[in-house]
Length: 271
Image (cartoon, rainbow, N blue to C red; front, side):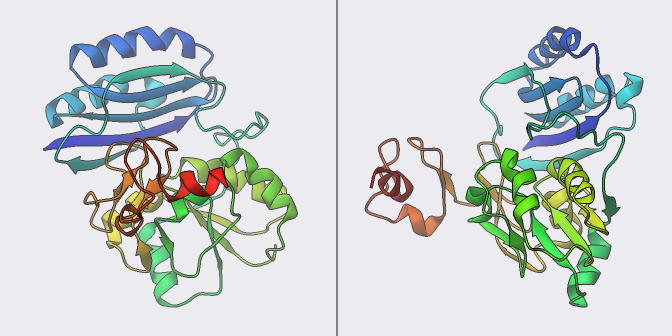
């Protein structure tokens, strides 16, 4: 079994460029695969390796006092979730295109996945908002959730400005691991929404604590697994190598799907 982790931390990082080489060397020496994003606003981590090597990395990163409390999410898979190791320098660790949004200074309230499930059980009168991209949502989402039908997270601020969601009604937003909601919740609060919550740890943490209760489908993940179910087990979804769209099992049965050549979404895009 391979251990996969995701973790992020928004914090001031003036020295982010200097962290690149040491982190790459550390991971290469332990044969850890994945991606680490570094920017002036913090760090974003996706890694896969044997558990003892992952534990060594977590111990190493937490020696930096800025990351001593970094929250790490774990999952398992039958093979390494990544093919190589990259440490990249970015303007943002999650790209929105608005550098004025600083989650380490201002963000929405956190709601624990167990409490969120209770709200869902009770059919509490809240807006459930999926902040992810359209291709992710196709594979699955929470029952009765709404979304802005965006192709990129950079479109989120404009979508909020143009939406007709009631601003006096509580909003509970979610994304894969929580990082997008850190920024999305701040945007909504700045736009006048009065009560905005973000599901702690996102969909993956919800699955870990509640399974797939109130969820339809599976959850798209940005690695070789493509999708996981409510038990965090890899599904049989694939990504089209030609256009990079995720494909469910049913979509893979299409006559238009020839791996590396085309899929239904390639054909639609060519019309």
